[in-house]
Length: 255
Ligand SMILES: Nc1ncnc2c1ncn2[C@@H]1O[C@H](COP(=O)(O)OP(=O)(O)OP(=O)(O)O)[C@@H](O)[C@H]1O
Image (cartoon, rainbow, N blue to C red; front, side, top):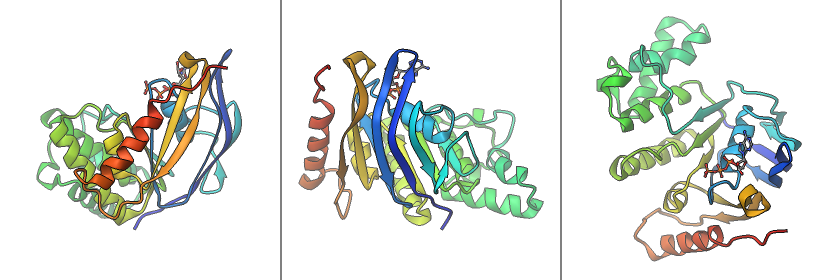
């Protein structure tokens, strides 16, 4: 079990010049929870994630991770994007070892941590390969292992599986779910796929609005996924999917 932190967002507003991208967003995430964020393009999902990561500052509001105000990026938060962002000149093991090595841990310990997370994403046989020798799915596994090796207390993922084929995406969803059950690291996961959100998350945050709708992006509903198993073919799973789809497709009235 790794580190884990709670998240508190209160009355968050983000403006870009005159444009109010997002207004009055409040969300509390207990530590260990997996939260997915869904919503139509432009509603502010990535903006919320970037603010939690500390890449951008909120215009107004409270943003705290583990009780500490977010003022910039930090090693307590690990971020995974759609493009894997690996160092192409480093092997899989060196990529994953990069964070632990910077902490100046003994060499043997760095290697042990790297190999543990490489094994967790099923890439032991590829530890000495370079990113250019791997498929997209394998590269994304490396990116996830690299972030986990830093022992983040909050994992922020922005469409991490968006560029992968359906089969690979399904495999990685299964693995991420297993890893989350094992580590209990808090996760905020942005996706366009409602099915993916219901499969992975304890709660799904539905956002609507956005500058192009004439209404600032905001949270329209938070849906608890109260399903014992995540059988995507079950009627119960599909009922939750339908509920979220209806919310996502409800266009807010312009003010
Ligand atoms: N740097 C920026 N400057 C000006 N406006 C921006 C900037 N970044 C985002 N926006 C605006 O903020 C709003 C929210 O953008 P954001 O990328 O968070 O949406 P999103 O829900 O993640 O969309 P998508 O699903 O298409 O990725 C949009 O209206 C966008 O045009």
